[in-house]
Length: 86
Image (spheres, rainbow, N blue to C red):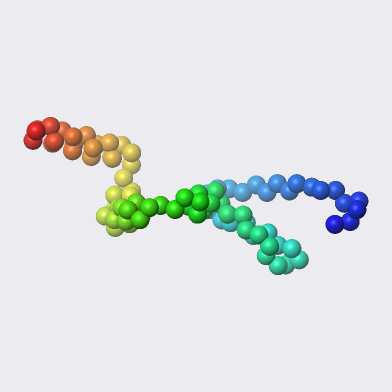
């Protein structure tokens, strides 16, 4: 860096919904990667195998598409049925 060059901070705005990583290059050669926050969290704390299996089963059965309200209704029905049995 030349003696008279000032150190500058570069701010890059990105939309998280894009879920993309940012590649930093120097003279056309990749030097670093800035992952999305979701990718960083996934890499920093990977899911235990049991949670991965549950997630895959949820996708296969379609329950991953349930809304919070639908989930609450399923839980309420299961609790009511449990009370009737017990």
